[in-house]
Image (tube, rainbow, N blue to C red; front, side, top):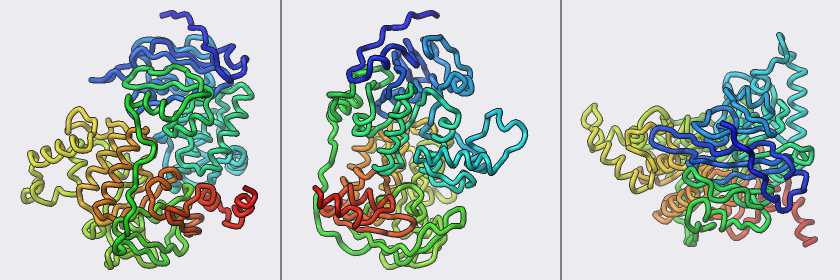
Length: 530
């Protein structure tokens, strides 16, 4: 099918040269999956030398569209053009050969291989032998150049989720892609690091490269994008509108079809007894290097304590220590009972719930049904348990109730959870954990990669749980989320708590500085100058 390209729209503040030619054009794209039309005659264009943001709820069809552009899917109808030429990608290799690479939200790395081996995987150089030192040095320089610091010799399974995402970005940069599709690239970056990445993207576009920037952080989108396209339910609701003059409220409304509260009201009240007490905890990471270096903190009933830290500074290991997934030295008490170095089932019986960082591999059993995932923590208890067997009718009744209560969009409770969008998967995990009526909830990156509507739902659930008297340890690299929800903020850097603030004292500049190794003294001159 031959379709003439549509003339590009005026680019607002973009320079005239950016609008003269199109880097990528999708025309009338249709893609259907069983029971759903993911893309319904979608048009999208990316101009040479621009950052074009793509917004939409989880399940809106934006990832499907980008997977078509990246060669992972073939459209059922429509046409894709790269620099004016029709293309028919049979694989991601074809897309990369055409200069188009995608950094996925869910990683495509080989866990047993090193960072260097993953970056080089699939390339035709080196031809026969891997010159390890030279390759590691080259990748190290590239990582340093773009502020994506990660040890080139480390194996992927030893890295945090945030560090793994940096490897994905490095893979595309190393291949010299002229067109980058970046799916939530700042999800694990501190504000200062995000600013550095934005500067890098601007230098790329100044050289004529083009970037599709997929993000749920509306403030970031308005800061970095030249144009914005919004999708909802498989269709485009705003096509290439200039970022200049757009507002977060308007974009959110276009995404979800209703007004969205940017900040939910957090009712202040006096916290109760200490539920979680961590004292002088030390632990190693998966590389057997120190991850926690004498961490101490308390979380009280009816209190949310936020842990602010850049990925890889010990916060993931802290969550695992508390929930029985990692050995440690020191003391961890839940309502006065020692749980350090006890099994995860023992910790569970003490009233601890856990929303893990990796919702796909750790938080759920992807190939099991929604019902199986929702009853995972109660299959040994009546009415689900019937002797040694599971009462299927009781399990389904509970699953149906939770699906409706938590608004989990799944065709049936028999649907495998791997088929759910990120937001619905997170709702399922929260439903399972909250329904255990925990005294303590450890929530790690609970809104990572979710859209504004799903984020609002998760925040409301956390605040409702707090209002019922639960203690919540919230670990997040989203500073806005930490400041919006937390009664107290503890900052971690290199395995230590380096600062603690009440909600009234918390300042995004001071916290961001401490997250990246600065000190209070470094911040003082800026305050004085103001």
